Length: 404
Ligand code: AMP
Ligand code: MG
Image (cartoon, rainbow, N blue to C red; front, side):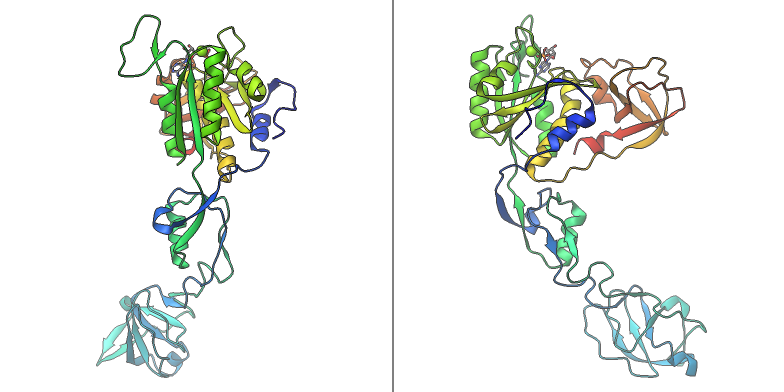
């Protein structure tokens, strides 16, 4: 995969992202699913329209279809036909109008629809206003999609509007990628699972549940390899199992180079590893490589770092492997409700809550404080070497952008 040719070192977020996005989509197979079951799946084949939407000119309002030329002769016309939606009307008889309803096809010969509020009925005939613009209240054939247009491109994750678009061109089945199987494992001798008693020296495993939540939001399949003790032996075993069962492996913790950190050595034994120090805060070294042929990413263990590095780095990698096109999250400008008088060499991601357009940071921004992320509704991005005065515009990424 070419991910391990570069020297380890301090790199920018953009460079790390570029490395993660370079390379093939995963080897996930393709399957056909009924449109009704396709929500959240990623299109493996782009879709072109075989029909136009709408398939014919139709009325956007309830009213009367006319030929505007006829009004030059008389502003009062008899009703020649009635056209409800769902019928195929005969041509408009010259010198008459047609009672027409929203969504009904425009009869041949008509070139405008006058809304019912703008006419008067006199002795059974319809009196029209003097000026009726050509084409008024007509939705043109193909104004949404024309035959041959791209409806959706390969790599689109199907949102409700996309499903509606596919339905509108008559697609009943789509070819999508099988959901990516993501193995997760949490390293740490100190970890116990919620529900177990907590002995001295232990903490509950948060990261497992953070990752499960994140992967569920991405529609990916979790292969839970569980907790891994801080020994080379158990790390090797867990990684072997993960590589066998999944398309990609995500681990948390144990990626530093301390005596209790075995991820680096284990991945190097089973495949290849690149460790990056990325110029982001929070975020310790992130490990990227492969176990055998299975892509691997190792996230730092502090739960806030796990969450953020997953969203900023893990997710783009998984999206690529899933065959989904990656778009950077939307950033909006808000006002800083804080001041930053010391520059930082790293790009910072402050957990903030935006209220009335102002970004209020959580008071404790330590990466060990998960409450900062749970309390916040998004992140403020402070580029390296940047000073911020209260009220300055700052970039805000809502969690709703990052977490799905
Ligand atoms: P590590 O990266 O393994 O050195 O872990 C960094 C910090 O994160 C340590 O304080 C760990 O106890 C903590 N940590 C690691 N994994 C988890 C986890 N799954 N849940 C909660 N805290 C964790
Ligand atoms: Mg550890």
